Image: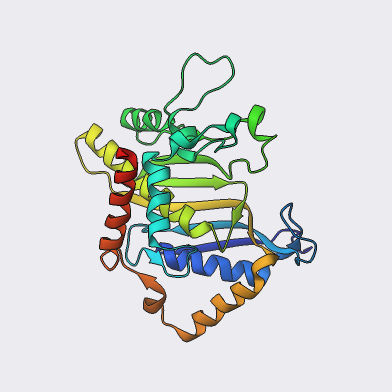
Amino acid sequence: MADLLLPVVHIEETTLPAAWERAVVETWNRGVQVKTQYDHPDDPPSRDTIAVIVTTDPLAEPRIHRAMPGGLRDLEIYVQEVVAGVHDHWIDPEHGKWQYTYHERLTAYTAPGGERAVDQLEYIVDCLADCEYSRRAQAVTWKCWEDAGYEHPACLQRLWFRVVGGRLCMNAHMRSNDAFKAAFMNMYAFTELQADLARRLSERLGREVPVGQYTHIVDSFHIYGSYFEEFRGFLQTLEKRTFEQRTFTTDQVADMLAEAREELSREQRD
């Protein structure tokens, strides 16, 4: 059998940090060298794979990996952007501001000539409330008439939901994902959205629908050459620290996450 041009990393773990950690290490070990459109002249090629990352219990503790980029405040702000749309008002491409947010694409999707914006998340709740095993409960983000011309088009392409075994499962499909500096925050925020949809569906059905497995599917799961040295430092921490020392439970950081939410709330009021 010929070698794959793009290796496929397939990971199954119980918790989010364990799944992400294994996926980036596998990409480092098995990824092929591919240049990117963001390389500087002296950057080595990225290490790139196709990734299918399954977390069987995405809300299980520990939930947070300490090696994620930025800090806990950045993580909570990103969650609020994806789940609550706290920065949708920053969208103003005509004046050089944001071109889109995931929340805006998921809850107010528009098309040329369309009469109204479509709340795709509300559609998903309606669809699954009517038929839990439907294969049609999905939301898309890509706008070919816009995104093909953007310098940074949407990485998330589609969310797909289904109730299996009484639990709400979700697949997130991404065309591209920075494995080391973005993927964990993406996965964490998407599972928070999954939990929010499970809550809304539970209210509609009048019974609890817990969160089921989360699958993160990426066409290009890559580690940029520009930060290889930083990534080697991450690999060293894996040898020196236990898994418990590399992660946080949400209880351990609850106060800091709450403080970030309060800061956002003050910003919205001001």
